[in-house]
Amino acid sequence: MRHGFRMSIGAHPGGVGDVNAAFAAFADTHALPADVRRSINVALDELLANALSHGGAGRDPCSVTVEVKLDEERVTVILTDDGPPFDPFARVAPDTTLSVEERPVGGLGIHLVRELMDHVSYERREGHNVVVLVKQLVVG
Amino acid sequence: MQISTRTSNDVDIVAIAGSLDSTTAPEAQKALDAVVAVARKVALDFSGLDYISSAGLRVLLGAAKKLRASGQSLRIFGLNQSVREVFEISGFSAILAVYPSEAEALAAR
Image 1: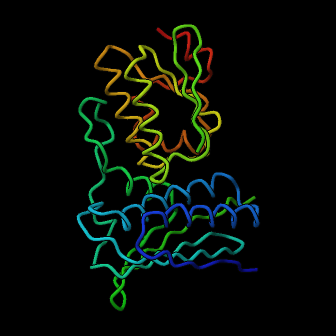
Image 2: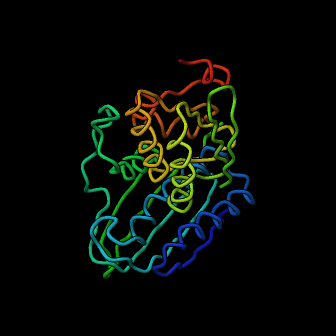
């Protein structure tokens, strides 16, 4: 069985909360494991806040579409936006060994996405940024 | 997100429940700033926290830095497995004082 939903959230920052609420309801309906649901909630927050807020990565806010697909083995999240070309995974991982005084504020979000998801990818397709996240469901 | 505060002996405990993410971080920061400004010892009760993103981590880091300036640490307890994983990936479990229980967080000097 395959399930899923798709929603467009325009370019307003409140859209992050709308997506997280919709995903929480979807996870509830399909009884996704709590750790899978939470990891995806974090990844959605990182990528959407980045796309929707001014200056998050030095670019203007843009219109975003979120698609979530579920099958027996994995959850796939596809984020599409119409902004200028931007590969979120091109950034260098931050130094997570610095002390609390040395550490610059921020820069961790994409690192979290990479580590929490089982697979991430980016491509520029027909004038859109397309980010795909895959989280495997625990087998057995 | 729901935030409540209580005091146990000389420690101000801030309980944050629900999600601490880009949507809720500004409110959490406001609440935490108010406590950190007047309290000497601060503990965060995360037993009701569902998940935390980097926006939430930034709030914790800001509070920890302010407390560190006055010789205190930000004590945190009640992490679920997902919050613990985010702490470990980000390196925060090494720079913040995470305790397995409220009793141990409050007993720490």
